[in-house]
Length: 350
Image 1 (cartoon, one colour):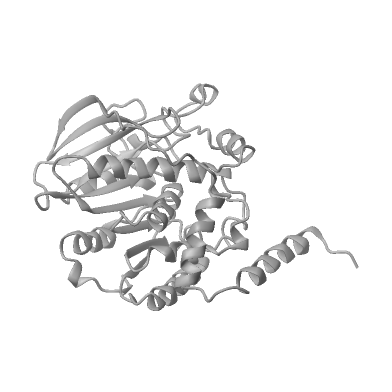
Image 2 (tube, one colour):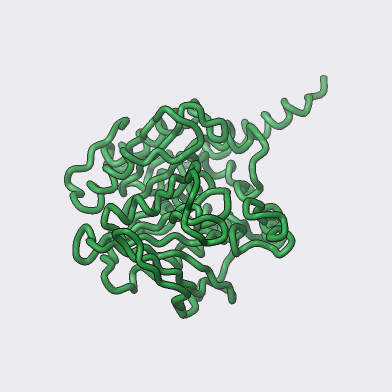
């Protein structure tokens, strides 16, 4: 009897699971080294040569308790990326820790720094992002909030005509896939340039740079930290899950799809590459985009992976009452310990 379509798709994920579990033990040094290399390759081939950052200040404005700068830097292959840099009046330490803040789907980096789509100061509800970059600068961190490719000012002209919430993810991801790259890979590599910028900026401690993102920004935050050891710790909100039970369980944006990734690892093992560095997860109990059930499974696997890496207390999860949104409070408290009191890190549920 022939398989129906649903059963055929399930058989593919089952075959992939058998293949990836046939190799070295998850969490082992051999496995981690091979997986990191394979993950980087599957994200796409991008040039290794780094261009000069050529930072350009576009605007500087005094805000309540911090300075907001609008800056543009060179990333790769002629691309330039705008970002807001928030500088606290009273840094947490001298030099200050820094956090890269990554928005999810919406109207871009303005959505997390207290601005409306047209650049005016926010007058309405901050939405699911809750202006978390502003919360971070009020903690005394220098905050870099890049505009991810495909959002805000970094959209195709045809999408800019349809309003601020329209993104260019599909066409960008499709074009990159057909040329051997992924949109996730491009965003991760551009985020690495934000790390370069912060490490060279006066007043920033180059050894205390964290990363925090929600939803699609959570993807970029988690996977950038997995591949770039310069990130001291990471907060991933509304994303950590299982590919099989989230990305494959509903129609997601094409920027989530990395060809062949299930032949190498499920999502928790990729995020587990961050170990033994700190990792904090947020998951809303009514999140329908990345549901709580798979998030709990992912967290359970991460606990095992962190234990295998000798850092059982370095991973934490906040399962909160809410939906697909930033929660913030426990994550901010955890970041404070990570960036100013690293000896006091504790694991378990928040």
